[in-house]
Image 1 (tube, helix red, strand yellow):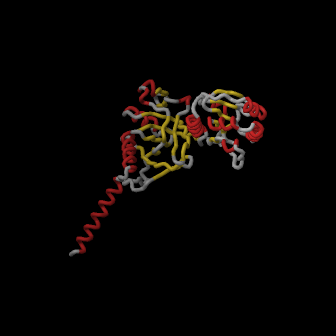
Image 2: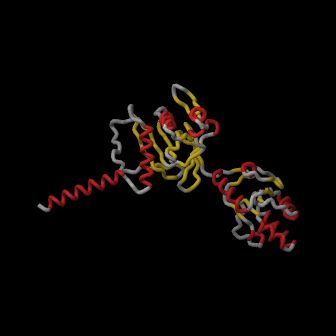
Image 3: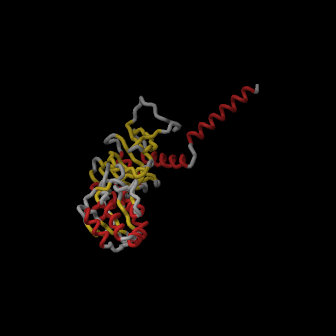
Amino acid sequence: MRSISIEDMIRVLDMEVVYEGKSLSIDIETSDINRPGLQFAGFFDYFASERIQVIGKVEMTYLESMDPDIRKERLIRFFGSGIPCVLISRNMEVPPYFLEAAKQFGCPIIRSRKVTTSIIHRMINYLDSALAPKITRHGVLVDVYGEGVLLIGESGIGKSETALELIKRGHRLVADDAVEIKKVAENRLIGDSPELIRHFMEIRGIGIIDIKAMYGVGAVIRNKAIDLVVELEFWDSNKEYDRLGLIEEYTEILGAKLPKVVIPVRPGRNLAIIIEVAVRNLRLKRMGYNAAQELDNRLTSLVQSNTNNDDSY
């Protein structure tokens, strides 16, 4: 299970530390957020104490209106449940009784200038990305016509050279050699490049080149959703390759199912153009048009028509 420290979250989301507590290195393991209005009202059944607790204007106003003795008892129970931290929105002042209860249990208190709904939205987006399952795959990721294409295959088969030709044709590089892939939704993968090698590409015989410096900022992109996997393999004369496209192939990465195309490599084939066609064909299929199926329907219709004519004699 992936986790992220409160300290990292504070730095990225530009929050203020009101009380550091025992440690800001406490790990957050869920992107879910809790607003503890029900807990302040005394309902602690099913309390999600492992979540970050967000207090907005409504919760703070309710605390102010409570009887001091009841409020103290509720806050002791609230902080004593082992919550990771409390976030105060709208840059509100932290009342002395609230700070006192937090210090009793060493619970960090952080604060944001943003309104409650805005900071919750930002936190969930950030945590969803930071806590997403992640792997690194050998390959090249390029943005072709707005679609993320992951090129995979044996080392030396020509993935980088194909990507370079695509960049020359106006498409964009995301990552070369190592692609960091995160699962941000049920069937959505985002590919990125390790910071150390971002925008660099290795071309055998030349060495390392900087795509951003050579082709301009428009030739690179920070990250991209992966929509299609293209596997390059050396041409095998003994293997039967699909020539019609009626068979849909898929591959799974982190449990997400992605369409896959296998392209045999041999001298004289322009792989960049073939990949462009594969992307255009993918978009047509999404819109409900399948060229292979259309041809199959025409052939079936022609055969049926000839059969009916033969029967009429």
